[in-house]
Amino acid sequence: MMKKAAAAHHEAVRANVGMVDELNQECRYFVSYSGVRLPFNLVNAIAVEALSNRNTFIRAYFDDAGMLSGFDKMVYGEVELSHRYEYHGSGRLKRAEIVMLDEEPAVLSFDETGSQIPRDVASGRDDSL
Image (cartoon, rainbow, N blue to C red; front, side, top):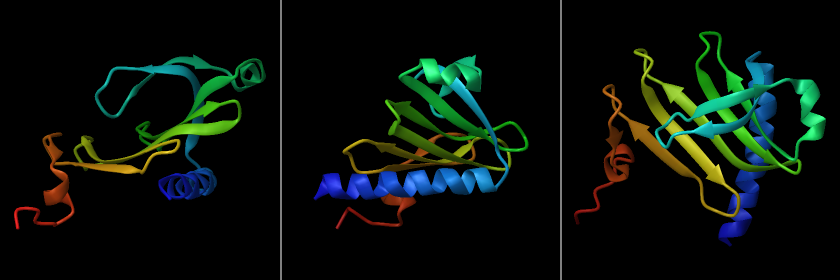
C-alpha cells in the first residue's frame, strides 16, 4: 500500500515539475549536492547538452530571486528523490517536502529563525492525549 502511495506521489511530482515550468522558473542541472542541512547545496553545474552522457543528475528549479524552489534527482530517467521548498519573507526555509522512491512523503516545517517545528505542532495535532 505504501509503495502505491509513493508511486502516486511521484506521478504528482512529475506533474508538478510541469507546473514549475509553467511558472517560468529557471531550470538548471547539477551533478550532486552537498551537506545535510536543508535546503541542499547543489554542486557541479552541468550544461543541458551534457545530460545525454549521464545516468544520474539533478534537475533544479530556481525562482526569480535565485532561490532554490525544488529539485529532482534523476536516475536512469526516473525521479528517485525530490525536494520542494518554500521560504519565509526573510529568505529562511519555511517548508520542505521530500519524496524518496518507495517511501511516504515527508513534510518539514521551519519557523522564522530556521528551527524545525515538531510535526505535531506543525500539523496542529496534539499527540499528548
